[in-house]
Amino acid sequence: MNSTTAYENLIMHEVKPSVQRMAIMDYMTMHFTHPNVDEIYNALSPKFPTLSRTTVYNTLKLFVEHGLVRMLTIDERSVCFDGNTSLHAHFLCKKCGRIYDLPLQNHEDELMGLVVDGNEITEVHQYFKGLCKNCKSIM
Amino acid sequence: MNSTTAYENLIMHEVKPSVQRMAIMDYMTMHFTHPNVDEIYNALSPKFPTLSRTTVYNTLKLFVEHGLVRMLTIDERSVCFDGNTSLHAHFLCKKCGRIYDLPLQNHEDELMGLVVDGNEITEVHQYFKGLCKNCKSIM
DNA sequence: AAACGAAAATGTAATAATTACAAGGTTGAA
DNA sequence: TTCAACCTTGTAATTATTACATTTTCGTTT
Image (cartoon, rainbow over all chains, first blue to last red; front, side, top):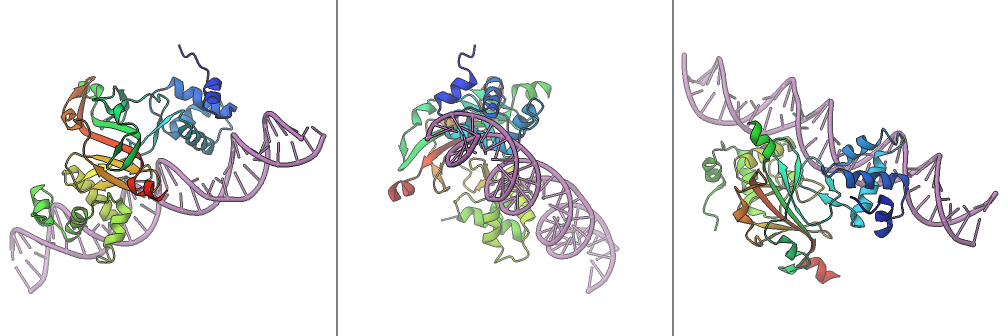
């Protein structure tokens, strides 16, 4: 399924590989749940007992800078990360807090690189909030 | 220019007026700079020396619930508030951190209320990031 | 005008997210 | 093997936000 290994992926994006970086990269390409730092840390620390939260922060910052992951600011409580870097929309359920991927509505992708009112767009974010499928069915 | 007073605006949205609430409402309708709690608190505390930060938090939460202001989660550092509740897009400059209003691109407003993949959309957010007019000219 | 009760405001303390930073560990080249 | 650069770690500091108990305000009733 996933043709490129974490190692290759890091190299391709000019990030020097390390045990921790590969583990975090692996996690991000296997869990598209838009985790925050704590979730990533908690998931990995059993397997890497010496892992530091600071390393997770540093690593994700680096990954974002090198385009390996996207940072989402949709959840007011904490920043989330998305291992899927293709342009797509997000839906945050106000009941359960889960974040879902959604296909990009309209043609948002065409706004990338545009200059609007003199401002140069380098990131496009399309966020929706509401009640998700799951929570709707429970009500 | 502004035909409705803060007092009237609160009443219309079924929020019981108070000195603090009117002051914060006034601030929000005169400053469309997308302030966070601290900026609002710092701006008002000289005129209202007993104002508490907690009151600003409580009041803004109430305002959001009653549709008097919008909450923006575009800035990763803190939540911002927008006294302009009409549907519009936002641009965050990655250099200076300022948030600008932009007209809604495409026809995002038409997504309000839609059900996508079973998820019911009650809030639409269109965020852009990049380099603003100002910062571009300085470079 | 005094007493009362509900709602609002306040201040402090607690929690949570994030950053700063100094110290120790790895790695690869000279 | 030594060295320097870079990575990782852990602790402490900072910042944003929430919890909560106390006090104040305000409108109503006596």
